[in-house]
Picture 1 (cartoon, rainbow, N blue to C red):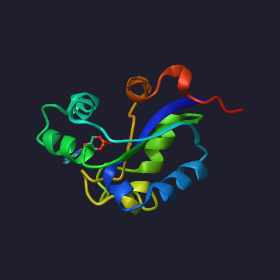
Picture 2 (picture 1 turned 45 degrees about the vertical axis):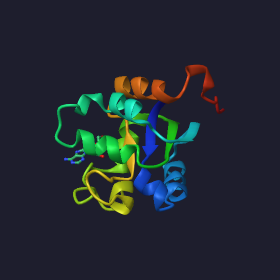
Picture 3 (picture 1 turned 135 degrees about the horizontal axis):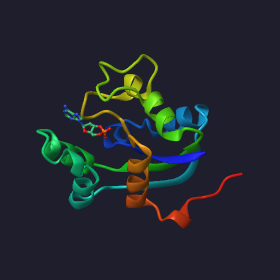
Picture 4 (picture 1 turned 30 degrees about the vertical axis):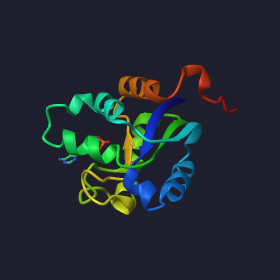
Length: 140
Ligand code: CMP
């Protein structure tokens, strides 16, 4: 079992898709070990996405991610990082496999409904933005 981070993004929260997405994640075998409805500020969004600092979409991405509430989730299952990436689909919903969360709920490449950590190392880094290790709920 390992844990990864998902963020249900402002576009999906605004369109009241939080529940549908969370239900899908539970159906896919993920257990919620931590959850927080929050709103990112500019500094946190900038640091979270620092790897994209030089990309042309960085400023727009920060503006979008701070535009409204997000639901941050610590999700556990076996092979959590890869399984979550598979369930959410490609960054661009036009390229996402049918039935994936982004194919179902994303608007476009930026407003793409959900974020998921892309490696175990990234998951550890990204989880630490939102959850203290001891804060995550142990489930049996
Ligand atoms: P995410 O998985 O959160 O990781 C980085 C985010 O940047 C990505 O989802 C999109 O929201 C956004 N992004 C990636 N590529 C582009 C792009 N070409 N144009 C606009 N936004 C993008």
